[in-house]
Image 1 (cartoon, helix red, strand yellow):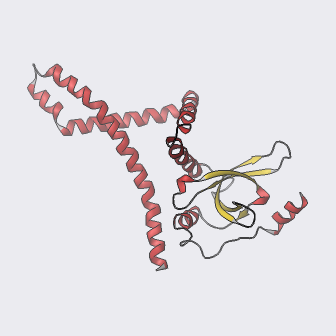
Image 2 (tube, helix red, strand yellow):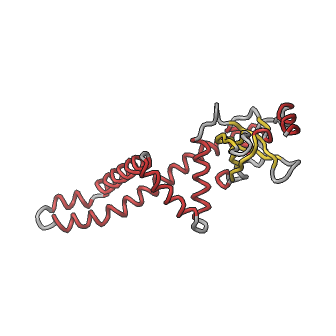
Image 3 (cartoon, helix red, strand yellow):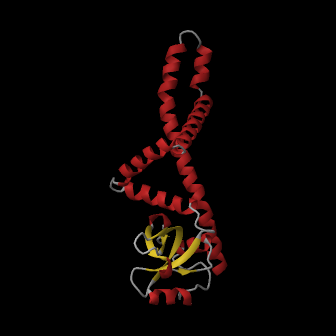
Length: 222
């Protein structure tokens, strides 16, 4: 049963990015089809009196699908180019701010953006899985380190930790905690996500729950 649960969870984790990718492609293709439809109708009305054969080609589903795919490809390329330059990034920041303030839409959009940033960001070495005290001392939860920060007042090292929630890891939240307050683990990101998605039923059999001696001594000294 443990092997079955592990394989089912691994399959689910493999299917999630495929499903999200399909949703994005289907969404973009849907927009492209909506844009192409009126253009095709205009072209048909323009050439119908002079070229019935061309009208037949323009009206075919094959041509419309190919044109929709081309429009979607151009749109994604343009969006990628836009977000790669300074002005485009500023515009996307404004767009993100507007969406994240919208009821319901902001939670879905913001949560998805945070998850994507977690897997895109690279801390000092590799993505690090840690435990942080939450929701109160004596209880701990799994978090993913996304970057390191420095306290401008004390100079102490801080960590930005994304905490995925069960069973939907995209509804997580972000915490900024002192480095001395986290407990590092030897889990991989896949181990952590399998543990979260399965409600703790799938994952490694051991975890470093207590912080290292060095961290505890630094905490007492501060």
